[in-house]
Amino acid sequence: MTPAGGAGVVERMPIPMGVVAETGATHPRLTEDNLRHIGGDSGPVLARSARSRALAVDGTVDDPMDLTQTGWAVLLPSDVDPAIREALKPLLDWRKSRVNDDKLFKVFEGNAGVRPGQTAGSWAATKGVSLAAPVSPRRGVPYYLLMVGSPQRVPFEFQAQFDLQWAVGRLHFDKVEDYAAYAQKVVDYEKGVTPPRRRRAALWMPRNAGDLATPLLAGAVGTDFLGEGVSPPLGQRQKFEVHSFIGDGQATKSKLTDIFRGTVDGGPPAIVFTGSHGAEWAIADPAVQQKRQGALVSQEWERGQPLQPEHYFSAEDLPADADVNGMMAFVFACFGGGCPEKDSYFFAADGSQIALAPAPIIASLPQALLARGALAVIAHIDRAFSYGFEDVMGTPQEQLLRSPLELLMKGHRAGMAADPLNLQWSTLAAQLGLALGGNLPGQPQPQSALVANLFIARDDARNYIVLGDPAVRLRIEDMT
Image (spheres, rainbow, N blue to C red):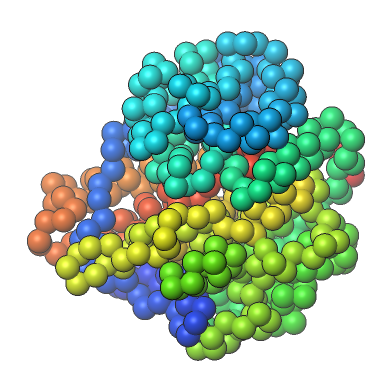
């Protein structure tokens, strides 16, 4: 988006990032008509924007890094497989020992878990907490909240509503043994059995030929992160070495493989940021879609080329000798973290939602990284737009993507590091409410381009999630 003559007018609608795998096409710009069917926001969303405190915890918490003040909880489906509960036991026992207070350590399971079809508001009410109020950890639901289960069973909307106030993460694997692997690797890392990595970060961002979105992303974010703009280099204050793999000859599939192997210059990174198109596979082949939806499109792809295996990196491409134990990742790509069942932005002629997948899914690449020892992955669960690095007027705001990385480099817990994205959602919802001024979504009169862009920007910020335990953190104090 660009300002029109400095007059504060939005000239055009944004381009969704993402590549249709079967055709190699990118989606057209959204139109104002696309936005007529997008709904408004609930009270809790607007309430977060009114907070005077940066984090949504009440005054009883002086240090949100301290689990003895914030507490920790796991939320399981009411009908969870007992084998999953058993697989997580090392992590549960470790968190219980760190919290050391039965009022601040909770395992919500059985009748206290999430019932089929239960909403976030309904579940919160059964625990005596409000989704619109700052979190008081001793009132029933501790601040760090790990949700377990598929988005078909615990919906993305459920997670998002809690994520506005709580520090929330999600675990979902297709195999029970992956839950066990993740739990044990986190415990080993935090106990010091697994050595920490050095203070290194890797940036991987293609500039695909014939494309508009990826050169814009790599140009804006890469320039900022490398200190070539107004900001200092990413991680400078935290003494992180940042190695960039941007554009031709750098953001290749083989280079990303080497990053995950830890064989690139500088050695294994503690933090990996990827900014790229995400692959969108058709609903006609659910098995392929489950494996590859949100796969990271590499530099080898050119606009208009149907995706071939050499054009993308999926879970299937994570090598057997991948070295990701103790790593954090931030994946900026369409469907990089997951995919909803219905399209959020494109609608049928009658206004009905278009099916994207037989059921909502968690992307396979983050699952594979977590099962191999990555601590957490911040990623997008829907189409991604440029609002991560520019606002609705086209004003640069790379700090929105930069802030979570800086916080991770400071040793903040993953749920805290992702919180600026939740605050952005709530802030944009408040701006949208003011811009609408009574012209409610779904009414026949046209919306202004500014309002339409605010709709998309709001939802774009909402759709970031943490995959993994939200309480994990890099052992910065032990890192050289």
